[in-house]
Image (tube, rainbow, N blue to C red):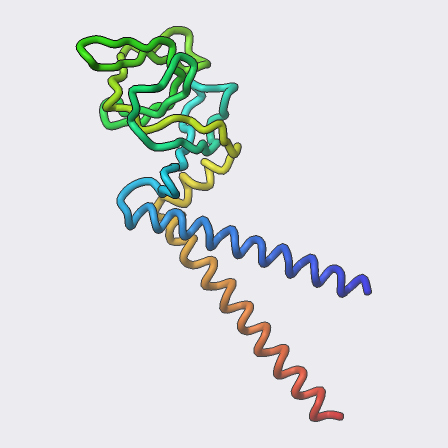
Length: 181
């Protein structure tokens, strides 16, 4: 009885691991094919690369943002925006309007002072949705590397081969037992 329970738990753990690896491979490969970040129904997942927004979210976390460069964001909203081809996620300190254009003064929660730049509404990529998963960003960054991408292709293949071989040898063993009877 104990052996059956252990076998079932082991099988569940292997299945969950295989599904997680396949899902991660899908996300990474789809983002490479599309030439950018994976987008699902107007939402994107971003990796937190610095501690500028701690404790709101930690370095190495992934966050979800709702896409859209809107001029309707308000003070206190957390937005992701482009500065010199880099993406930054900071909190809005002030909203300014001039000549029909909206711009934002931003600051990282963990930074001493406001950012040196002003963000125009055209540079805003989206708004933080308050959805964060800690530490997953480290795995996503590794998965986006060449070694990580290769590993995501090789590991599921090896696991599938091992599973197939176990099934084949199990079937052969059952046939031998039936022949012996």
